[in-house]
Length: 353
Image (cartoon, rainbow, N blue to C red; front, side, top):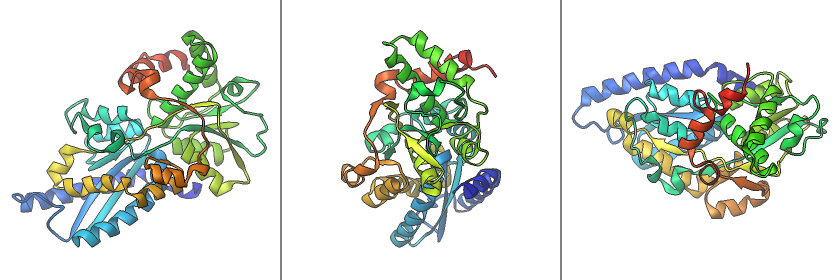
């Protein structure tokens, strides 16, 4: 797993360059055929770019192959799906700055909302386009520790004991890191009778123990597993189970008493698909994530499926725990982003480089 992921990380600039070239070629084709404007319903091939966050690499590698076959059987077209992965915040910024994503599958709704910061790239009501607020799978935050759990880490409070060092990405660039931060805050606030000053003191101490912050979750996994830094990795549940699958003799997963419901949504980027003529295929690509077959792929890749039938099939795979939510406990992503992660927000106040 990790060799592949490291190479994928190193190859990201090439992926983006190829995406840019592919998009230019698509634009040239559209210009040539102009009037019809529907690349997805004419011609023998079509190409789309999925801009996603860090730990979805394996999930979309598998799903893309399945959808490509389905699309060809349905339309006769050859479908090329280009994939870009990185820290969710950075990925969002790349699309804002011109990366021609047909679809975005990012770590949190706030990163998709941000696509309209400079100009409107997608419908402001994008979350109404698909079921479950356009969230075909969920996850949560767990701890990955070294085999035998030598620091005896059981819950959030143990992260600030003794000489424990914690690995987590940068909340400024990583969606997973923002989920990590909010889960830690929620535990500390609940554990201290709702006292936000004590919650702030807890995350301040927590981040003093972070020796390095990567830009994305996969980078942090590599820091923990390959570089050997830290005693505990704050991780997406799927990322932790993937590490366990690849090297179960080296790590253990600790599920804390309280965590957060991570809801990574998906959306069609309207301005791009209308320009390229790829709306039909892009829409079907995201709708396909809700099919039972895709939901099983999702569960096998350690994400929690949204389909009740499939979720029941995999219920023994995912432990039950108390979960706070972004809407109920933090007032939604717009409020949370401004309070915690905007310039001058809580994270800037507590983190000393």
